[in-house]
Image (cartoon, rainbow, N blue to C red; front, side):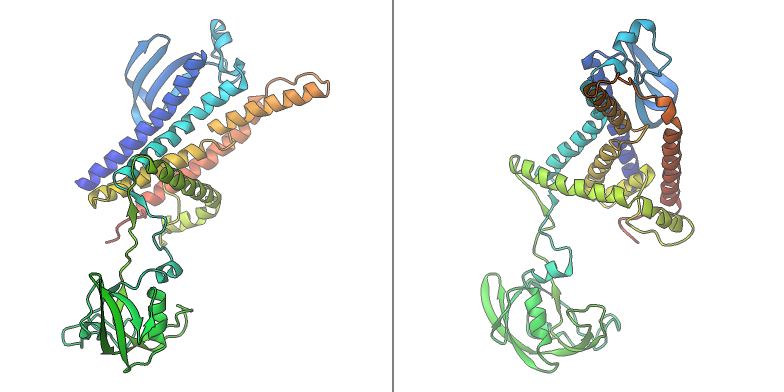
Amino acid sequence: MSNLLGVVLFALAILISVSLHEAGHMLTAKAFGMKVTKYFVGFGPTIWSFQRGETEYGIKGIPLGGFCKIVGMTPHDDDVDPADEPRAMWRFPVWKRTIVMSAGSITHFALALVTIWLAAVTLGLPNPKFPTNDAQVRQEPAVIALSDCVLPKIDQRACAPGDPASPAAQAQLRDGDRITSLNGKPVNNYGEMLTGLRALKPGETVKIGYVRDGQAAETSTVLAQTERPPLDNPKGTVGPVAALGVGLTITTPNLVTYGPVAAFGATGDFTRGLAVGTVEALQRLPQKVPALWTAITGGERDVDTPISVVGASRLGGEAVAHGAWLMFILLFISLNFFIGVFNLLPLLPLDGGHIAIAWFERARSWLYARIGRADPGRVDYLKLMPFTYAVILIGGVFTLLTITADVVNPITLFPR
């Protein structure tokens, strides 16, 4: 039930953000004096609407987005009443049209930024210093987590009753102790502890300095034998090594909360990382098509493949079902930021395509004026229709692929 609630909540959040996107277009257009005749949430048949001034507001039957109708977006619109010609959008200065067309994406960015700031001061943001690779893990303090036993073979089996306790347990070490020395040689981090242990031999007695609850102490134990690959080559050939029977407890917090002022800086840092990740994801989209097809035809789903609104809603449902509200919020932030960037790509019928054409016209008019030639006027949108249809077709096929993959082979946050 909680999973379904999460799906509904995330789908509703997406619908609200897309509706606000269209509201951004509408409000800026009205502010500049352009005529907006319709603003609707959803598509298809009208369920409910009302007229206020010159604009009809309402809700349609298919809750998959929204739209607003601005009179005369291009010179080729043939539904402009002669009385409305002076207010046709294409007649306004290019900077005003740019603001109107970019207002949708700006709304998505604003939603993302506000949500990031709110997360920073409440639930917290992912800690940029949290170790994410082996090199960073080895720089962590050597705070240990005890193993119940040490098996002589790698991945042989789980510890069972009757197995001898690990050397660390025999030495009366506990979870949370920080190793500070081995045989008198200082240990500054987990990597140095591993290196120090590898320099010793199975069956050798080792003196261990450690800190517990702020108090330094010392103990000793006889090292066991197990098998591990070389430290500098995790995929190398395994061999016998000395083992203490401990793992690492990462003490660097995964999340960091901030005060209201400090949260602005954290929001900026998080947004920069999000922007880089979004651009990289867009660059990888074409090469991910084969992976989507593999997922649809029975292969393993690559977690790095794109997802649709369906997939995002499913992930949102999983997050709520497992109480991972920060994950739910981060999904919402990422999706809004991605939509904002994607919508600014200079391709018709995206808003970025209209912006690109407006500035191309402006640059071309400026250039022709400088070389003494007549202004060539507006771009003929009709000549661009084949390209526009191609973009729509490619986008439709890609959307169909992602939706199908999200239905038949979805990505999951919490594998069973």
